[in-house]
Image 1 (tube, rainbow, N blue to C red):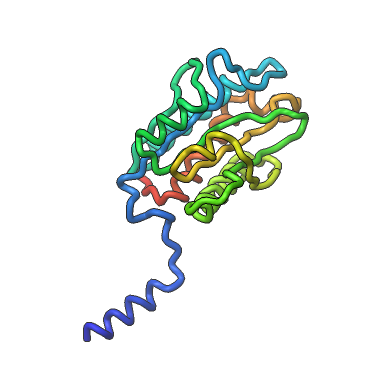
Image 2: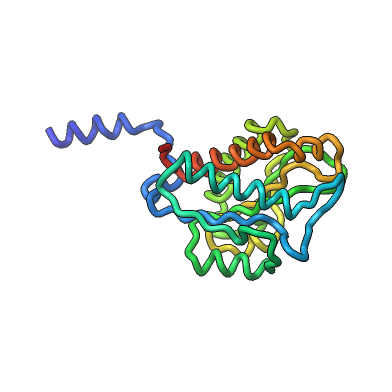
Length: 209
């Protein structure tokens, strides 16, 4: 009888897609990094500063995750307009023991749309990191309607030096009038944040409240 039950349960579980770390969802530590800050303004154009936009999106993402999802704790690299080095950001995340790191940025270079990055090196968590990134990427594009510029890899410090799975997102182009107009709209920033929050929750297996 026990063997029969085991077989039936095994068959029932086939094809079910479990979240990447559903078993550890209650212990999930999420580190959100608003890019730039303080004396480092990042990109600027069309009356916008990257450091202000990244902080706004990060704070909104934090609030949505806390209001709509459970099973996690959150920490931000900054919650105000302060200068913080790249080393300080990754060291803080690693010391805290984060399970997932996301750095939020705004692009420049006259393009348009959304793109995301993971580290281009070789590391044990690469496959899982890319899978998490893919989920978040899709949710942001869906929430915003941004042109999808693709899922990419690079050697950015924050995705390379963070021990946990780490991604970086580029949310529109500050020097492209079409994107800048959207980035000036608080409702649109809410959409960007909702996409990040929903993607993080789905990728990490966070239950809805």
